[in-house]
Image (tube, rainbow, N blue to C red):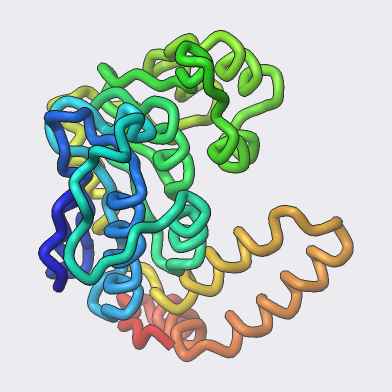
Length: 258
């Protein structure tokens, strides 16, 4: 495993944990961090023991966004090339394993985009959310692709044009997050959900997640035909046969991951 400099990686056990680890800088997202996350995701994808991923930030902030001082930012781990948001967000959607964002504090600008790119989001009731780029004369171009797939047009444009920060309940109401919990319960509830997902068929989840992201922009009839073919692939899985047999036999399934 590389000696990462901007993130922490714990991939021992069925739930891997990725932690943005520059709390002194509010966990910014720059080329080095993107590169390390891409490398870590590749490592996790190849590790069959890992069934789910939790992504969080060290300290009181999830991520305050893009690294505006990227030219002075520390280099990434030796042997880990820098990467762009294009490469990182693509790697997240091609992972084939569920990623849960555990939002412990503000998720702003690029940090908000990273959060929304996760499959599920559990947030502390003290967290804040926003596309704040307009305040410094910028625009959240890259993360538009993520946010507009989760939030309606009017709310998205309101966030982007005003830069106003939303509280946790507002974020829940507009679809940015799945669940809001008291800060003291964030860790326990996130890990409980991750553990639940890790107990599902990894083969079915992999096919399902990939089909979800690949089909989301298709026209309706081509999407149905694509999903019909993907359903055939799911039904052919050994895990599908095992799941049905376990259900009929009133026992817990033993997944083979294929």
